[in-house]
Length: 285
Image 1: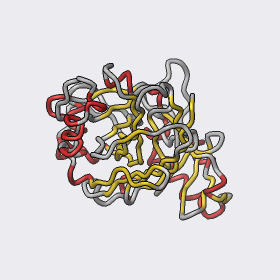
Image 2 (image 1 turned 90 degrees about the horizontal axis):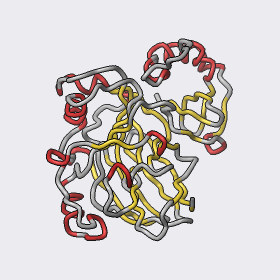
Image 3 (image 1 turned 135 degrees about the vertical axis):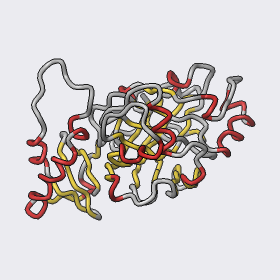
Image 4 (image 1 turned 135 degrees about the horizontal axis):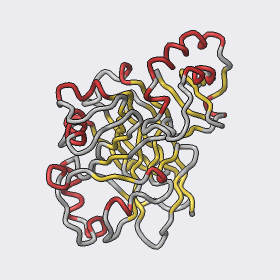
């Protein structure tokens, strides 16, 4: 199932070029008072929401996909986790290009570990990316994103994929420079996630998905998740050995070689096989 958040926080099911408005399914979510929970309520209650959707779908209002504004499918993630240098070809690319490493030490993921991005950087594809430092190189990085579906700590790798609610297409945008990754990648609009949540039961093998990105029709990155240095299950186990994972937490799994600059006026098209395809415009902040 493809679940989207659209327009004014409406909930939709996407089938081909149609969005079925199933927003009344959100009525099953529990009401909260302060202090608010540390989870995304939709993701934490996804089975109950999906059960309600089943009773609404046949009579749900229908809209053209091209007419709706697609938001990030996860409204309230507790944290955004990202995997640096998780493809061998990107490791070689980063080591060989001064415009990428800027004198920073580049280690593959087992040595570099993970990093966190600010949740304020999160947007959906219809929002677009807004370049904050146009005098510097600002790069696209296509990634498969996993959305955590249940709470876990020290999760065994063998069980890790059962903690995934679904998958999204991600653009981990970055401004190049000497600062720490988490700072350069946490600029407003620099975490694009969408176009919807492909629920985990509909993605047969997340370890064998082709991902790609074009800029103004020019192919920039193309790779398969089978070539991840640290696979999705291993990433989840690794992350959970350092901090508790909660429903709605977002995990960027790493980008391959081919990262390159974008500028205001560009249009990126990012896709992940079996998950989705999103078009993202680039503007100036």
